[in-house]
Amino acid sequence: MNYENADLSFREFRDLVLEGGSFCASTLTCAKFVGCTLRGINFSDSFLGEAVFENCMLEECTFNHANLQRAKFIKCTLTKSSFFGAFMGQVRFQECLIDGCDFSHCQIPDGEFRKTLISNSSFERSFAKSSTFEDALLKSVNVSHTDLRKVSFINTTFDDIKDEGSIFYGKKPWSGKSSPKSWDEFESYGFD
Image 1 (cartoon, one colour):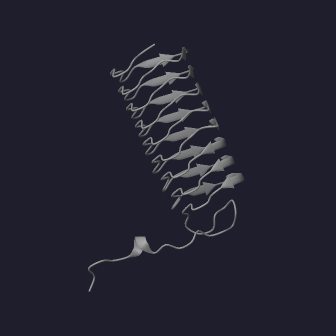
Image 2: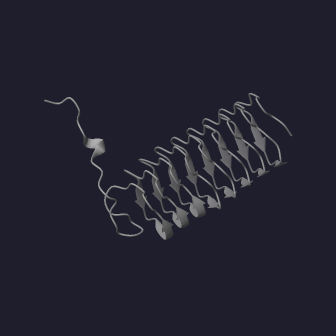
Image 3: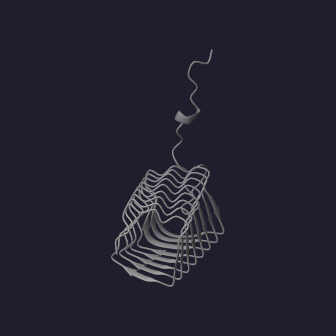
């Protein structure tokens, strides 16, 4: 199955099992995947703005450098999938299970992870400023060198968080330690 460089905006994919196909460099604006099983599907470099994945299983899928602005993942299971370098502004994960996924080098400003279990996954060197994790569980998650300023952790449980060099305002809720202060963002140039 090859849908590379295709415009599939506003399409609905329902109750499908798709294996080993490619949507590379495609436009899937407002596309809906409902009740689908996606295995080894490549969405790299695609535009998935406001796309919805609901009650789906995504296994070993690739979203590298994709644009997932305002995309929604609702009641999905994501395993061993890669979002490396993706733009995920205002993305929402609601009641999802995420295991073994790579969110490293992503931009996730104002993202939402609600009632979501995230395990064995990496957000290393990502920008997650102003995101919200609510009623979530983070287990064996790497947030090293990640910008977590203004991130809200509401009723979130942590287990085995790797955070070398991460930036967080105040005390980190998983360790109780503060990030080293960097005043660079407060410097004023040209003020007399």
